[in-house]
Image (cartoon, rainbow, N blue to C red; front, side):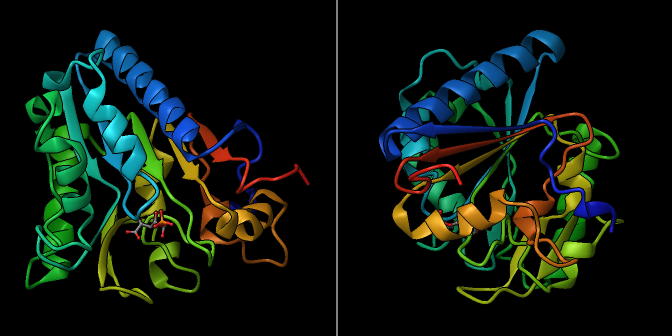
Length: 246
Ligand code: 6PG
């Protein structure tokens, strides 16, 4: 399976002392990626991650003074089918953590319309927005990613058809928890310039060790299938999530 070439080549693993250190390092990587993209192309296109882990990073980004937010396009890697002001909304996480009350207010925000009554139509709408702004395939400079305890990333859950989707860049998908989702597909992720996983906490130690090891069997976990065409995948983890390298 072509995606079985799990992304070991071009992979970087950085272990920081704790969750706060991961957030600081991730903010440094975000700022550097933004400076490089803006210097090269005048704009920085980034997909934000959902879940709880990025909360500390978003607070750090709200304090940064070295990011030209007026030249930043903020997208989302995935979103839950809940209202934009719902506690489970990935947009709401970023909005409350830094978009509503920091210089990041100057960024162009492209919210995933997962609160639509027609998720398939919403997926197509977001895909068209990505393609209009970033080309085909849409080229994001950076995609922030989390890791679920079942090995999912974005809202690409093991066994779901969305994992194998290669034609579309955004799809609607069921999810085992919280709500149905909109998610980027691997077709969109592969075209990105860089992917940055943030994984913290002892609860993620087992799945992180499994995902960083060579795939077992012929079906890699979704998080093992993140292989960028011409970009680097970086795993930024804390010591609790990676006590000792295997
Ligand atoms: C989502 C996320 C998802 C998340 C992981 C980790 O919408 O749920 O995109 O992929 O990153 O589930 O979530 P935590 O950071 O909360 O552990």
